[in-house]
Amino acid sequence: MKILFLIPFINRKEQWGPWRWGAGNNQFNYGIASLAGYLESKEIDVGLIDMQFLKDKDLGIMLNKEMPDLIGISCYTPTYKASIELARLCKNINSDVKIIFGGAHPSLYPRDTLEENSFIDFVVVGEGEITLYELIKALQDMRYDFSDIKGLAYRKDGKVLINPKREFIDLSKDSTLPAYKIFPLDKYIIQATSYKKLPTYTLVASRGCPYNCTFCQVKQFLGSRMRYKSPEILIKEIRYLKDNFNARGIMFQDSTFTTDWNWLKKFCKLMTDERLNDLTWMCFTRADRVNKEILSMMKRTGCYGMSYGVESANQKSLDLLKKGIKIEQIIDTVKLSLEMGFYVTTTYMLGIPGEDESDVMRTIKLANTLATHIAHFYLPIPYPESELYYQCKETGGLREDIIWEDYNMFDDERPVYINPKIGLKKMVALKNYAVKKYYINPRVIWRNIKEINSKDDIIKYWDAVKSLAGFFINR
Image (cartoon, rainbow, N blue to C red; front, side, top):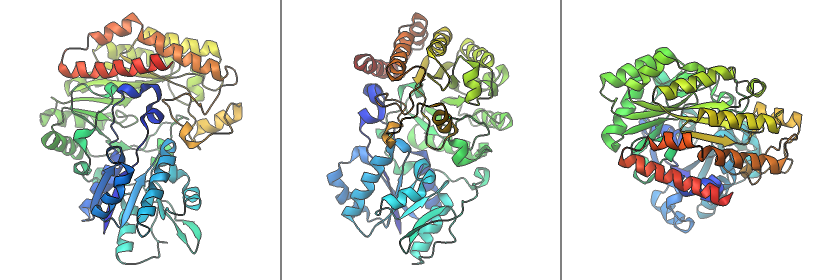
């Protein structure tokens, strides 16, 4: 039996909005890679098609060539429509093929996904490795009683059934090498804000999150406990990327890479022992999960930068978002990281529930005072069923005519949430002002000019300039 994973094509304007000119095309899906790697370890035939490199009219030719028994499509809330249309197309081409959905959105709405789309046969709820394998084995054995497969939603006699949730995987023991080789890695261009040297590949070392940020769904889907791969497993994966795909950099996509300092110390030691510290790497983290000692250790092992979620200059907003940190600590850590020579990205949310225009201006002022290399400004996006969603609903401003594609952090044409104290036009104007003011800030310009010392840097900043030009022209 063969499973073919499909990544839907997303129009660049819809995906990146005004930033599309220099945004890259990196659709590498680590979740699919992990699923495929696990299935391959169980001797299941696996394939992948990224639809950005294939025209719809050629999909039938590829499906006839691949001859899959099962098609897997992973989707997020803003890509739901595109994923649905791709599934419909596949079923029209081959009505016998089974289609399974997974990812954050169908995990949140498995019943709706199946009831609204008769051409979708199954939904994996939560982590998919074991659930998907057990489903494939059942189909291979022509066993159509799926009631004992945890984490699976399906139809029986016209009714949608949702089985009990599956326990989380122990990544320190059960991790297998992701199936990098099925992806067209040489065709992917990573975003300019995420690398120092090319090629740089994205990688995830953990699942779960112990923090309570109301705007994030990681904890909701992957649990409140950080589950790390063992440092040894992670080092083998990095070595594989270096030896087989000429990796010169790694971008860790974990929500908070540095949560467990004991794990981090072991990882950094192995990076040095295995002579992998010539790779440059970057990560997302929190200001209260690093200090001078930790940052020094990370820098010695190739870490060149990190991204901090500042979110707001207003403590009342941080408290509403349940960040669990004081603004003073964030400021001190960001300044320390800059002083130590790190490339620093910061993120800000403008118009958080309860804020007025003066609160937003205070955040914009803080961003320009810190003047990190990169700053991302977003309007609040209360993802479905997140705590922020209900906070926005309670305080007013949540649009009633929301469609799934509106949950897009890069395009503000149809904001999901409109702060009642500020209003739609002013919210958009404030974000445009924040971006423009920041990137004409002489301190920001000079900080980035000093980073340019190689061919990779020239490529990186040329893409960044194209993105900014697209924003300025379209705003």
